[in-house]
Length: 251
Length: 251
DNA sequence: TTGCTCCTCACGTCACGTGAGGTGGC
DNA sequence: TTGCTCCTCACGTCACGTGAGGTGGC
Picture: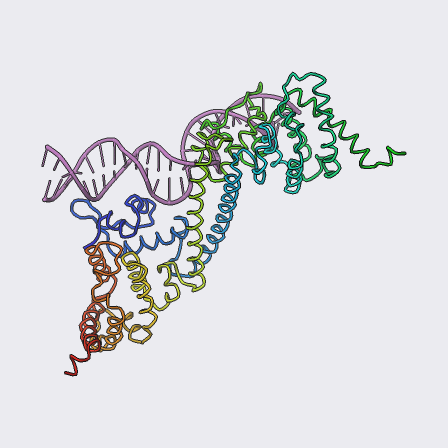
């Protein structure tokens, strides 16, 4: 006649702690005790426990179960809410899985943003860090352009830039800048928004973006690299202007 | 030069509490302070925070992130583990959604087990409770059979049984038992395991199942209903024997 | 003086899980 | 006496969220 705590728990496919937890929260009435103080559960308790477990398995929080009419259609609203939450959760988890797959397939690390795994090995540590920051500042289309640029930059000059020592001499800096110039000039032509990055494809404010970008670049690259960047900028801007409007040059 | 706590949090798409939490757990170093005690984050902090957030968004627990080599392939194992967990979660959530849909479509309550929603309105409260208990004791195939039986029981006798008062008189009990007999006899013939329920399609032990079943039935139905059940059992067994092996009768 | 941002505890959330320490019948 | 089951606190888990109470510069 009746079941012990462990028995109802086993029958309901759950644990004694769960049953006791439901007592504490008042979701499940405590049954009568036997002479030695042991709880003796009846069918009503078992059924109630099974109902609670069923709702919990559907993802309904205990607080909602408490205020829920089990049989009635009053539960429909709760169920709709939970269903929407479940759908959103599945969406999120599926996206996470897709990204994990992308990382594993490229045998890349997780220190590169979504969509950049396949070029992880072509980026230096600083590049990967900057790319992470980029991903927070620019929108999808800007990131797509950035991917294309990275894919097209196959020259040895990029490798040279990544490993440029902080104390590189004047000649090294200038020749590297000149080697990189045409590449960057082409990017400026292909992606005009680069010329005015503060006002294009942003997800945050212009000011914040600008400041963050400057701060990130300044913190991630060494003095020589920053110097080369400055030189490249000047060279590429000039080249882009010449190529972009050849009339200026030929006239 | 540097960002405040709110600024790094915003840049990383998270909250100040999250950043502080990572400091407490030692996942993220605290930056230098300005003269007024405010924290001043640098690029290294921002990048580290972005890396942590990325891993968290993929579903990796903080404890694993702490012991993880971000760039290296050492992370692959963690990612595989998490991927399997994500797959399992998606599975569970999808099943939950399917059940919620089933409940909503049948506009049934959640007080009936999976797969029984479409006949929820043909079951009394006691029947629904017993079905919940059944679902814990018997396997899928037994539940399928049970569904078929419930679907075929369309007579008014079932309704009469469900509403039988505890003090029903002798005549009412006997006539109801005789009305139900043939139906149950057919079940005994169609589903032979019913004759020996303790040994067929069980998910728990024979003894436990038997005891639980008896306790549940005894607790869910009134005295008259239990009496009728006993009478039906005798009648149905006899009828099934006659119909099952007609030779006994004709000989 | 008011507002705004920053700071540090400390406690809360959610649904339980995990000991610690003790009892009772064989 | 040993083992086993039951019991009740009380604290732990996970990843933060939420006040409370106070500071500092405009």
